[in-house]
Figure 1 (cartoon, rainbow, N blue to C red):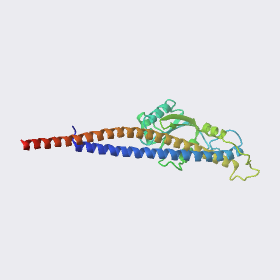
Figure 2: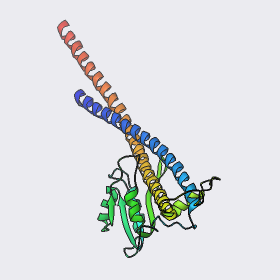
Figure 3: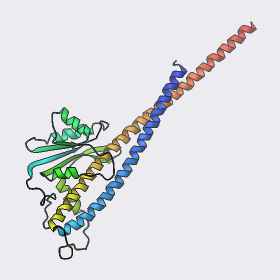
Figure 4: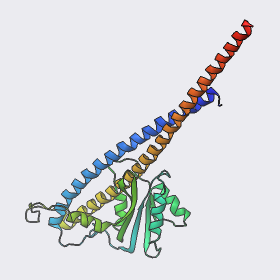
Length: 283
């Protein structure tokens, strides 16, 4: 039988793991709630911008906000891959990269990757992205402006990211950025207020305002995609911590039982020694 001190040390170590996994589980749960609230707020802001945009744009096409600023568009499709910053994301980053590379052709695609883990996975496959960015550490006030600057230079953009289905399920999702913005706009209820050049002054011009609104809505959409990817990552961590905590709890219970048995065994042995000693005296 293992010594009492050895069992006690193992029990204390496992108890520490139980505490840590429980804390990480709680942090992940809190982050999930915060991100959901953040996405809801940004969706409301998007709806407000779309109502204005819908009333002042001159056609039904989405121009990526580049009519006033981009002279020449690159005749390629930009692929944006959003992955985790570290490797603690299960196999979903590998599946995401593998899915993106099935559609990747160097002559017609450029890749931008967000998250160090995705960059490492691409380099392991001999693919060099055009640019890479760190996944934002904060869950609030995320800015996608550097991404928008790149998006405006390309004919089209497709985004690959981790999608939150539930705490137990995360999947890979793909969106065409311009189509995603337009589809979101169709779901917005347009108010009765009419905004036009006859009753508003647009500086420096109506086209410039429309471009700014398109950039803003793309930034909101990309920010929400990054948030959803982080939401999926937190859900994956929550599930991993829940499983780890459950296993640590089982180990703690087993070690506690071993400790009590070992302690009782020591007491029994000492009691036998006392009884045998008393018998020897009486003889």
